[in-house]
Amino acid sequence: MPKQTVLNATHRAQGAKMVDFGGWDMPIHYGSQLDEHHAVRRAAGMFDVSHMTVVDLTGDQVRPFLRRLVANSVDKLKVAGKALYTCMLDEQGGVIDDLIVYYRDERSFRLVVNAATRDKDLAWIQAQAAPFGIEVRERPELAMIAVQGPKARAAVIGLLPGDAGAAVEALGKFAAAEVGSDFGPLFVARTGYTGEDGFEVVVEEGHAVALWNALREAGVAPAGLGARDTLRLEAGMNLYGQDMDESVSPWEAALGWTVALDGDRDFNGRAALEAQKAAGGARRMVGLVMDEKGVLRHGQRVLTDAGEGEILSGTFSPTLGKAIAFARVPSGELGAVRVDIRGREVPVRVAKFPFVRDGQAQPGVLS
Image 1 (spheres, rainbow, N blue to C red):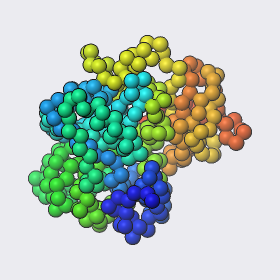
Image 2: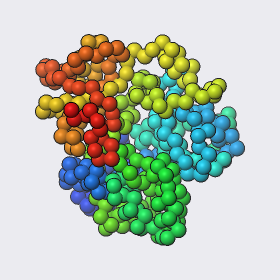
Image 3: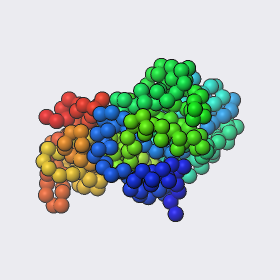
Image 4: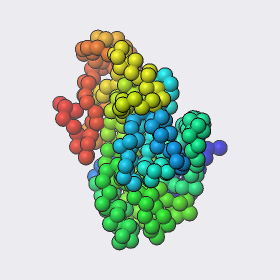
């Protein structure tokens, strides 16, 4: 049986269609995936992301440990609440998972890792932490609600008492605050997976349903995994297991910006990444836009002058009215790019991603 979040019965009562997602019984939509997508782009929507795994790390050597564990530099984290997006790599430079690291104090950091990779992530983190004497504590008693969209911040702040609301309102992007509320202690992070502003709110399970219902009463639309996927692809955000995995390095997943080759920091996979960078990668990830009618889907062949590639994530973009995709293709001049759709070669354009930012098509995407 799939696992359930504390909000499962609430989703069902509110008419959600449920699906098995990585071993979790999760809402795919509440009636209209398209309406939910537009709600996030135009106003505010919320997602149950309680299946994500929260892990707290504590110890005197926690910063040196994280300097070893992840490819980005935690030395950038100096202010309480500041967050960092990064990847954990194996020794071959393959991506074990992508995650967010939050700095709490010099002895305490918080990680949020993907649900589908929970077991392997925890095993890897615990094995890596042992020489550093770090306490690795999973927090299954915590739920998480992502509230996203141009009106999302105001909706959350409106439910908080004065001092807490002021602290959350003052947050810069990619930062978090720990505040008290009528819903118990909250960890409110100005992060998300949709390309819109908003918060990811970590709340104790006992208060999660009350918070969800209060947000709904404040005008925030419940949204499912279907809209979350179209939103994140428009925003140019990778999905682990589809756009990257252990067989792919950050260079090949357009995540070079998350790698900090700073000083002599010996993080897992560094030597492999440096060797790959020096040799020049054999493949890369690009964005594609299809002007003809149809949908780009995972697994379709991509035909280029440099050789064949394949579609990784593909969807019809509700914001753009066109099909968009990530594709992994050979390095080199691609020439006229086509996608094999049921034996027909359909022309596509290579476009920079994100495809959509702040609700608007980015330059070159529609032309």
